[in-house]
Image 1 (tube, helix red, strand yellow):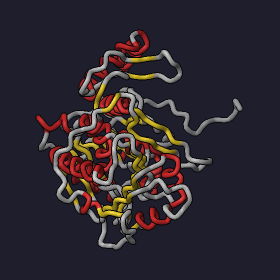
Image 2 (cartoon, rainbow, N blue to C red):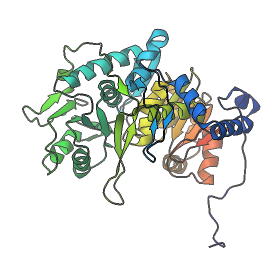
Image 3 (cartoon, rainbow, N blue to C red):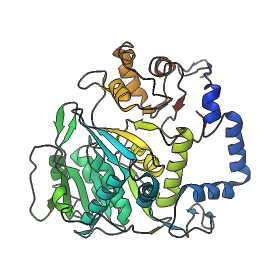
Image 4 (cartoon, helix red, strand yellow):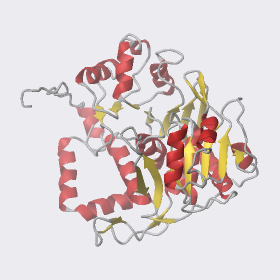
Length: 426
């Protein structure tokens, strides 16, 4: 084995500029090593201080860690909070009119939503979910396209203390059924159809098929967002249109204040190597990890325009679309389509149009774009970019260099998160 060379082995180094490093949230390796040393030597105070700094609570915690019943550790367990409040409400006094989401639809239509507007949408939908009896601790499956309403649904569940389980919109009826069955879900939130690359995706029909399968009897209601003009079969007494559910609902919804250790969501593995395995994430420790890694790994600044191209069905989409950016009060781009529709310049055109400063995508996407030619990014003004990121499988050196030189112009540091961002400097 010692004679086998890895094609990922790389020794070249590309340090960020002095100006970038001096302004960074973690300003170079000395600062990073100091954080590591502090975390090692003062573990409880390190995380306790971060928890107090980054999270707003209804009731402050008095204990950082309860390890008396290891390995069932409890973090900040006597604190009380609401995750949706931390992602939306606390920004309203100063940043109510700041853009929270720039949504670009598959057909190119752009919608901008402020934090105030997002608060109104989340509250109305949260109140709507209460009407069919969704309460704290109930499980809700979300099977949606990459639209603003997917974020609204996740935040609304968090607001009322329901536990969401998002299923990637490309999964089959069997996959939806498995997750409903394992979670014991009470409600499914979906859309009549999704749009992707100029084609429609029959989401509601897939849910209907899933609900014919054994193991889905726990479902009482299906909420359907009308994304397209296409129809959707309707089961009387079970199915309700999204717009009907929120009709007449109050634009205010008091958050359900939950214990720090109460569950926020369940997310399942793809199941490609066997039965899907679900992981339950608790409220405060998950939120703290998402917030802190977002600001450190992506060097977030209040004037950034951030774009993560992942789907909310994956953990990357949970942490770095729904919770991390919104929790830090960021402006972010959400994209419904694919990078090659209507042509292969879509990503570069969007970066130019929306003045994206932080761009975060997958090595697979980068490699596919390389094949389409280096001349395409050069047709657009990408000078707004200041930081690039990759997520998923490890990125190979050839793709990294293309990303660095062609997309980033040789000036943007690359955060290679490899599936899970770490609090390391750019």
